[in-house]
Length: 301
Image (cartoon, rainbow, N blue to C red):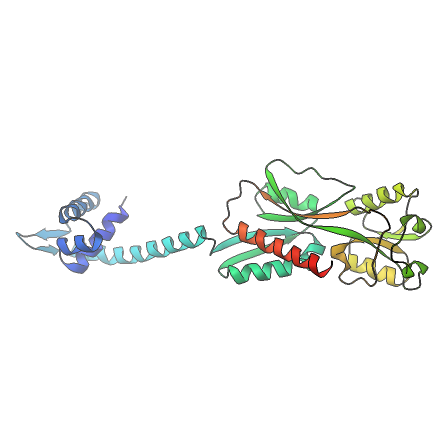
């Protein structure tokens, strides 16, 4: 196999026509340059130079090899530049997973900041629920996943993952426009015991959290409509078809959300990545996500 150092030395000798001048350019001694050319001749089986008492003349084989070496060295320089850019986080791909409400409320602002600071980076985005995203994270299909965890429905995170908490969302009550509770500053959950409820799908953490929270108030919610689309939840409430309890990130399009009375639990939004993930783009992405979450909290405080 050709030694790239010897190839570069040959290129310099051909460019200068002198072992000593090539040595000066490369920072070697003339003897070291001569030894590298001899080693290259042994490797290739070619005679590269006709040596006189004080001069050297390249053979046609040396000229032909030198032309190819120039292209090779240009490609090697481009590869070295690419590797440095990847190591510095200036280039490369970072793969993000997010649940829908974070995808609408946090991800656009975080990624806008990230690509502004890392203009050479590529980003891919995968949408899914936590149970869908965590396996992708563990299989190294994603670099980071945004997931939610309800206070009343804790989740165990595998030991090989690192968790960054981005924000804690309050749970808010959505009431129809003509509902008498709209005049209250805070809504006691027990006052909604006889209401028709709109909730997320029965197998979700949101639905389980609602059931547990209502149980603490002494009733089981009568759920008539189920959807994981919080836009649809807001429209169903606005149409007077029921009441709902939704997390903070889902309130962007919801009119008049009200806080619950008392110390109500909420939902945490987490950014999770594999501890052994050394993608240099991961730290600036986590920073952008953290800043986007802080800005969201300031805007909704």
